[in-house]
Image (cartoon, rainbow, N blue to C red; front, side, top):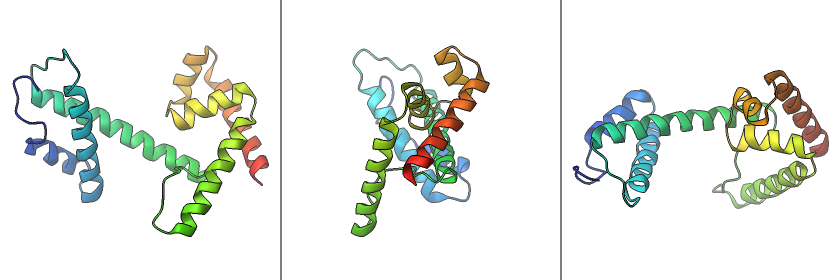
Length: 161
């Protein structure tokens, strides 16, 4: 980083992450690690000059925190809908196989949706866009996006039963 030391030598970053997640050291550590990785990725881009390394790191922390919250919200929403929020491995091999099959089934079901419904599902649950952002992206109103999402979820639910 131009004008600064190594990216991981900022105790203020850890303090800020712990302040964000006051009662959850594990989530604070995850946020700090994600931030350091992102800072490193951005810092290694050729031709990038960073005038204030501390402000840069805190700005990245803020953006990573927002992404983290969106991801958690998306996972909670998918769980409420009865869908699996992630396709990550689990320690138990039996659970891992069941989760893998569930993810494959879900992917196949999404693949069978009409293109409009598929795009709306992709933008909402995999890209993390809000309904307002999807409406702007597809040049239609938010009410239509709400209806399309509801129709897509209902269709997926019927396919998966």
